[in-house]
Image (cartoon, rainbow, N blue to C red; front, side, top):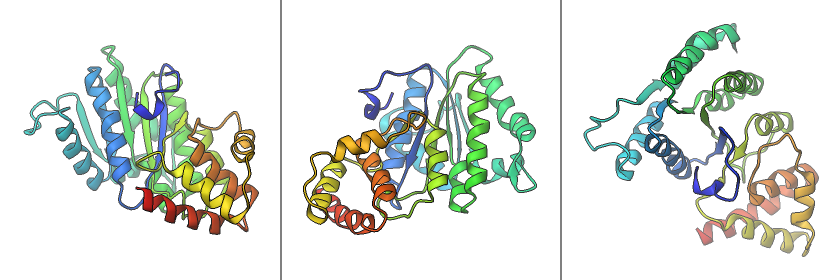
Length: 258
């Protein structure tokens, strides 16, 4: 699994989520590494993504040597457009269970029929989130998880959420965290936690109990997540009035360290 999960015992399958920022650097890197793992395992790799993401992933996979520069060895790779696929599974404005099963379920069952592993990446939930259709995104995640309950495959979802600057709608974030097994780091290095602790200390005062309080806030049904992302969620929940200033200062320190 991804290096970010090296300290976590890998379950039979994972449902990863990446909250990515505007430059999408971390998303492209982590998604390509996830897809490369699929290629390395001889898995069928299915990508349901925006045109920009499909292009970026293929470019990175070629750089990583997962596929040849000519793309002649992409036989195990299926590329689908997120908007087109989403349109096929939405009925009356919401993801429909029967349509999802016909379109996505059929594809996944066909992929595992020969006994091979399957790695899937999806932008569809991110497109719903971008449109602020939070309930629809949660329903689509539920449909994915229902499918994962009967078919063993690894899934990587991406959401266009800037953890540091974008205000969270509490119920939507709760649903997002409950739908996945792991939330991946939103930054390209390990300096975000240090930046958050530094900013917290300067604005609130040194608090050696910060990490402990954050971990106690974590709900058992939530995805496993790095301490930095857990800190951000805790701050927005426990200190809504002071969180914006803390996160703004943390972002400044984080950018300086990146």
